[in-house]
Image (cartoon, rainbow, N blue to C red):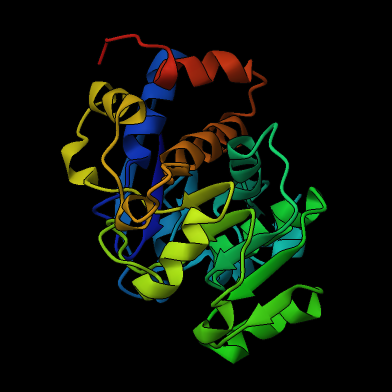
Length: 278
């Protein structure tokens, strides 16, 4: 049996085992998928030695990039990986967050965007927007973390007051503030107008994941999900949480793990198709 896992800290909220287990079962693949808490990145390599592949989540996406023997695709420019596999005894890294995010905004047009956060997820979002030629500004209180974005030509903002009286077509929360979706990345007085004046808002976090224990639960949440604090602040209701991106990036990661070439829409239907099987 092959073994895969998602590794990060915190990790208890992760829904990746439910998603990947559903994909393995659907395609009759003899594999299991675990959650692994890494209290320190020094634990990463000894842990990965027993796995066939892994997904990397907060806060280790950039650390994982550094230990890869080879990095492919979008991850090369981003400098962060969320999917790693063994290939000829080498660690190969990929970033499927980009493709997952692009699926979320597929068919939509934006004049500009604001990214809140400057970590690995923010880098993936910035790359995705750049690939769509959508100008993006990046906000983070840490000016040092913004330097990499400035070097790539993004407008950078480290004073939240600068955001007052500004508007963006798309606002993305890529911070780790409130991993359970219960906290806001900015003061409400500043964030609320930004969300209400946009065309679309995306919170990469999601709420109440502890209530999702089975594939049936996940399908229920995807069709009628509780709002994160970020999404609830948007009175015009044009905000989505991170569940869709999570599912999409997981599907792309599954294709890397298994080296399969399956129809994406058929795999998407496992989660959105209304089938009630667990």
